Image (tube, rainbow, N blue to C red; front, side, top):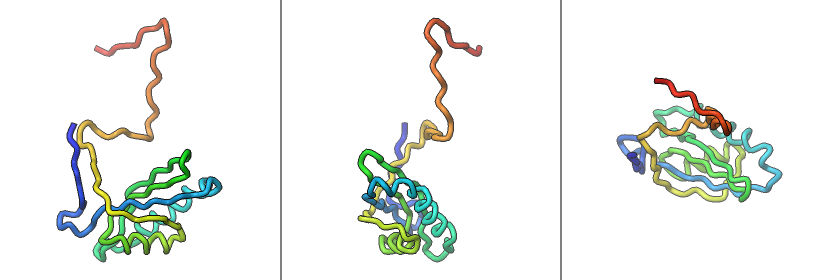
Amino acid sequence: MTVDIQRSLERDGSASAFLVERYLPATASGSLAESVSRVARICADQDPDAGAVRYVQSMYLPDEDICFCVFLAPSSDAVRAVNDAGHFRLDRVTKAVLMITTEPTPVDMTRRPRKPPTQGTSPTVNP
């Protein structure tokens, strides 16, 4: 398995990865998807030739009431600006290094895992 370490996804180094940390009250989890979607739309509507901020992904830790979001941007100020425009409060923005596995193919979170065979049956094997 290969891990690609990237400080920037742009060949010219113009956009770095940034991690946004949000400490949320438990009551905010109900509107979290809407808030993430709003900020992602703001990013998508930006002109890519004008140093746009790109939304990458988010992860919510319900046991900790923390939401992490990853952005590609020319600066932390640009990341703050899109989150401010989306009225999505953040606690911290930190420059990040992305580590992406290139082999095997990353897990597709939209596919349901196969159920293991029940006891007493054997799995079907295709020759």
